[in-house]
Amino acid sequence: MKKAIRIMMVLFILSLAACGDSDDGGALEEAPEASPTEAEASVSFTSPEDGDTVASSVKVAMEAEGITIEPAANGVRDGAGHLHIMIDTDCLAEGEAIPNDDTHKHYGMAQTEAELVLAPGEHELCLQAGNGAHSALPITDKISITVE
Image 1 (cartoon, rainbow, N blue to C red):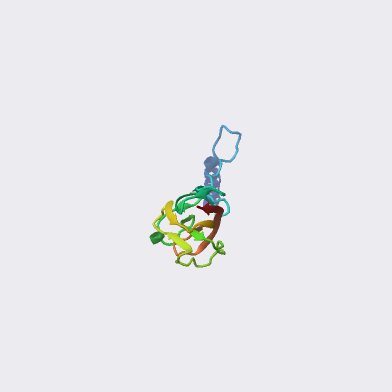
Image 2 (cartoon, rainbow, N blue to C red):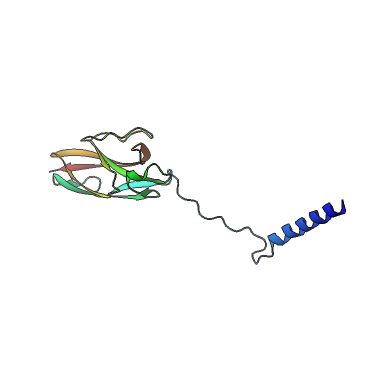
């Protein structure tokens, strides 16, 4: 019984020692910053800008914040994906498979620039992040442009 009490006393003293003295009045250390969530992530067209008039062959520049842009071959990973441009069609609902056709352009090699050839007239572009399995993420941007 005495041995058990001594062991408990040693454990108690060790736990107090582990708390240690601090210069900050005993304040807890700040936790490391959490990685961004999809709610904090964003994608955007950096060129052209919404409302721009462009030539039929238009260079598109894209960027992302709060999400790592990586090749689709890396698979599905939290906080990562690649970009897609939807031409004259709506962005997709979260989790929906992104088709690969003339109106849904995939940039699965982690590209952030693209060359689009568009017919003259007004066009709406949706930039959307997707995961490594080409499922839509709720991270989008939309612009309207006019092609001469």
